Amino acid sequence: MSQSSSRISSTRSSKHLLIGSVESYSGKSATVLGLALQLRSHGFDIAYAKPIGTCPSEGDDALDEDVRFISSTLKLGADRVKPTLFSLDAETITQQLSTEKLIYRHEDMESVLASQGEDILLIEGPGNLEEGTLFGLSLPEMAQMSDASVIWCAVSFVVGSG
Image (cartoon, rainbow, N blue to C red; front, side, top):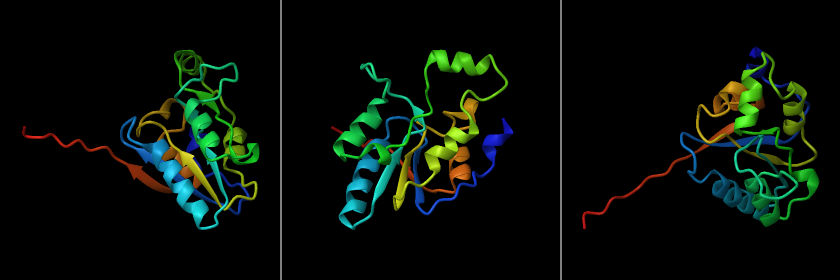
C-alpha cells in the first residue's frame, strides 16, 4: 500500500484545501460550506470532494449525505463535485481486509484531485487522523498526496458551573 504515501503528480491549476479534524462530527462539513460561501463571495470558482463516504444515503443513488447536502446547498454543477471513492462501511472494510491491494485505484484519487478549471478544490477529509488508514487515505496521507494546505476543525465544550 505504499503507493498512497507518494504525492500524486497530476497536472492541475487549482489549489487544494483539505479540511480535517482529530475527531468525527467536529464541523468539517459546516467549515467547507462556510469557506465555499466566503470564497465564492470573493469571486473564486470552487469544487468539492469527499473521497471517503461516511454518511451513507437512504436513497437509491448511494450518494454520501454530506456530498448531497454540500452540493445542493452550494448548487454545484456535476463538474464541481468530485466522486466519492468508497463508503466506509462494514462491507468495504471486510473487502479491504481480505485483499492485499487497495480497493480503489490510484488513478481514481488522481481524478478526484485533477482540476476541471476550478480555482480551489475543497476536500473534506476523514473523520479523524486514523480513519482511512486501512485504505491509504488517512488525513496525513491525503494531505501529502494532494499537496493541500490543511485547516483543522476542533470542537470545544464549555461546562457551566451552575
